Amino acid sequence: MAKLEIHRVPVLRDNYVWLAHEASSNLTAAVDPAVVDPVLAALDAQGWSLTHILNTYHHHDHTGGNLELKEKTGCTIVGSRSDRERIPGIDVELEDGDTYEFGNATAQVFDVSGHTLGHIAYWFEESDSLFCGDTIFAMGCGRVIEGAFDQMLGSLDRLKALPAATQIYCAHEYTQKNGQFALTVEPDNPDLIARMRDVDAKRAQDIATVPSLMEEEWKTNPFFRADSPHLQETIGLTGASLVEVFTETRKRKDGF
Image (cartoon, rainbow, N blue to C red; front, side, top):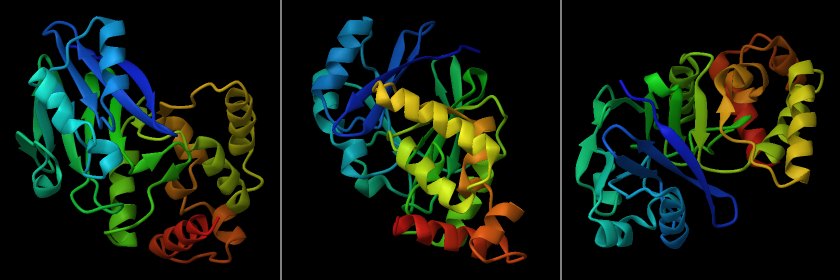
């Protein structure tokens, strides 16, 4: 099995497009291409040719470049079967439990609905790489828009069960503000305090903070930590159900 070479492409205000290159088959995918020109420029700089688009879900800042990139390169567009009506140019439809062979690399597909319905994530086990769109952010998660809070919590629980070494390639640079919120619900979390010190230093130099590491998220992401007595006490829900704690935490973040 082949490992991916992954390259970050910053676009728009705070989006990231990820280029995933499988060298043995000379395949390159753009994950959630919001726009066209920066993606083409990055491909040219790397000496790669676009063969695929992997979409996690349908929002325009994840699919805005689909049709033009397909027209220019002839690439294959891969996305969610249940979201196919909203994925421009979709060719290959995937659903929960599927595997997708990307040359000699294999992605396991998870339905992670909650932020929206039909949202999927791609986990390349050999590369310790998770492309999760807007489901997980570094120290955060997507706002619950189309789904339900218990559904979103279930999606996060599925992903946080992946190995500690998993690199999380989310779609936005939201880390600093997410961490600032996290400190309001776990102000005495030493791992969180230390991580925010590092994040603040990086952002002061305009250094990216993603991908993040699954092991770090277990320790510092409040949406992974509904079972934390510290968090429960801070928000006044000691002993409440995990769904209640998650829901209250997410609602607080919505207003932060």
